Image 1 (cartoon, rainbow, N blue to C red):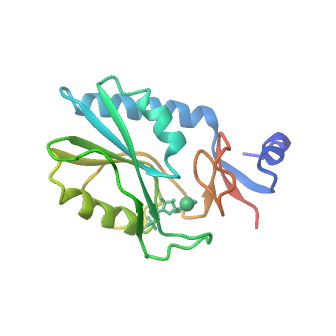
Image 2: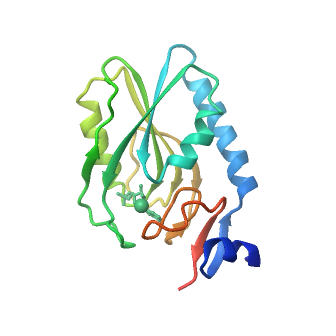
Length: 183
Ligand code: IMP
Ligand code: MG
């Protein structure tokens, strides 16, 4: 897909390609919402977004779930401002909501090494939710499969990508598409 000029203007950077355009993302997120809706036939769902990367995905996904939903967030930090996973996961903000007895759906932007998620799932499972599952928009398929990841939007290239919530040094989160930066 050639990169339109307006996309690079919006980013303020050269892009080597657009990986998923806005329409493709919207279609898949609606489908994910249907999958989640079907997987929880009764009861309330606690949708727990991992900030900051999931904020746009969560906003779209939550509106596609046709069930009673409560939204909360948690903040973990693993990357600093670089492009490589440090493996050092820090929890900066804990969800205010009590997880005990709740159906918890963790919403994650992208699974790279899977370390962030593994660490968080261990923490969350200890709080005895009724069920614990993950909906990830993107998976680089580098990590060994994580059983809790029941919903995945797209398998994505093993490259560093930005947009639709994903950043590089806090930039590019606002892009409505997902793209690879030019070197
Ligand atoms: P992991 O612990 O290596 O799986 O890293 C997961 C987190 O790193 C994600 O939640 C993202 O915030 C960030 N991340 C991983 N890959 C990318 C990428 O390609 N672009 C932007 N952020 C990424
Ligand atoms: Mg990040």
